[in-house]
Amino acid sequence: MARVYNFSAGPAVLPEPVLKKAAAEMLDCNGTGMSVMEMSHRSKDYEAIINGAEAHLRALMNIPANYKVLFLQGGASSQFAMVPLNLLGKNGKADFINTGTWSKKAISEAKRYGTANVVATSEDKNFSYIPKVAKDRFDPQASYVHITSNNTIEGTKYAAFPDTGSVPLVADMSSNILSEVMDVTKFGIIYAGAQKNIGPAGVCVVIVREDLIGKALDITPTMFNYEIHAKEKSLYNTPPTYGIYIAKLVFEWMLEMGGVPAMEKINKDKAKILYDFIDNSGLFKGTAAKEDRSIMNVPFTLPSDELTEKCLKEAKQNGLVQLKGHRSVGGLRASIYNAMPVDGVKKLVDFLKKFEAANK
Image (cartoon, rainbow, N blue to C red; front, side, top):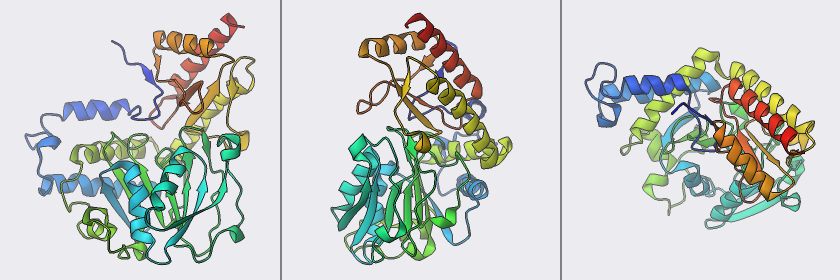
């Protein structure tokens, strides 16, 4: 069967050159005579892989030396607990901006360990926009402020990050890390599940400023302590070795493409192609506020469930898959991460145009 265009929100499409290189190295990686999956994580061969992954990510995101880069297990969801366990020791309270499903889960988990104060929410309009929050709304005594930078389900993102003053800003960037240029120094912690823009499910990247390490609550499990993982360079226990290897290949692919600035331009071009169609359509309708629309996840709806199911079925017949929207929003959703080629978005729009013409 021919390759399809996969618009899944995650696990998501990976770059074909990465998949092909991984396939070529499956039985013999870099002359070792073995697969990466068979390597000891303590070996020099594997240390070269994980060190290379970190170096490439630092180059892509311009990560300063006073930030640690960790490759952890448990996905981004584990960070809903790890962040408060490691940061709440200062004052026992944190501020949150609630912009969707994943924000709500982060808030719920933080409440287990301290006070989670919601300073703003967009739940009144089904999380279709990003609340604008002035600096004076944040508690200067809070241990941190938490945001979800891009909302995979609702299709919104921050056009500008909030100014939190001296309070560390923590961002779940799972669905838009590496999609556009961002200033790492604006954040105390950035974390991201890999299965959207980095690699396969199973790896979580955490970028944490050094001064925020070493302050974990006494109840913090060893495996949830940033200090342990930082000291051991993500090798305290066996890490998700193959996922980190694929991440390294993805980072290399991005560097060859011209890095994050080049990727940002491509991503904005892809999003414009799709949004221009939706904005001018008489059948399809976008759900996110235009000023806050994501360039990674594009939800849109049809007038009825019957038309939605028909569209999904015909899209699949045309090699366009995983377009069903999340149940909380409905309709369709096209996730157009870094690895989705422009041609994939163009083919999607061509299909949607024909579907609209046939179903007016």
